[in-house]
Length: 186
Image (cartoon, rainbow, N blue to C red; front, side):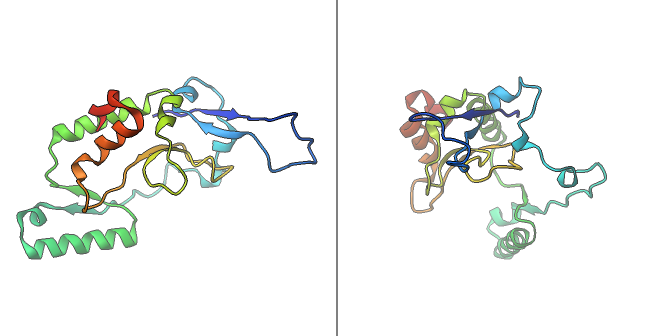
């Protein structure tokens, strides 16, 4: 995935003098569909050399969680899987799940629709912009939270509640926010 940045300036009058408002600067908008064609990386996305990954970095040991026993209904396997998930979250903050029972076709479809969404023009993705205080929606690079060493990323997040109809959460989000043309994305 590639990224893009555009400086957006909004103004209700003449620009402030240099000494009037040093905090007001153009907001940076991250747009993957534009930066892929640019040869210069905006300085806000350039990290210091000492913080960049190196070729001799140790291989990351990703905790592997096998859910086959958990899904079989074996209470001992369920307890062990739960313990391993908790340990991975505390030590690493992430883990890789295998034998989870999700059909390969569903995973492939999810990847395809994810690619379709993130390849859309920025103005289309921003229709799903996450609002302050919400956990669902599109966000890009945290440009509103940070001003330098920005991550090159876009996210599309959804919440989950066991008390709602979880199988409809994503579909309803796309329908309500982006419209009928996005039903199959859900």
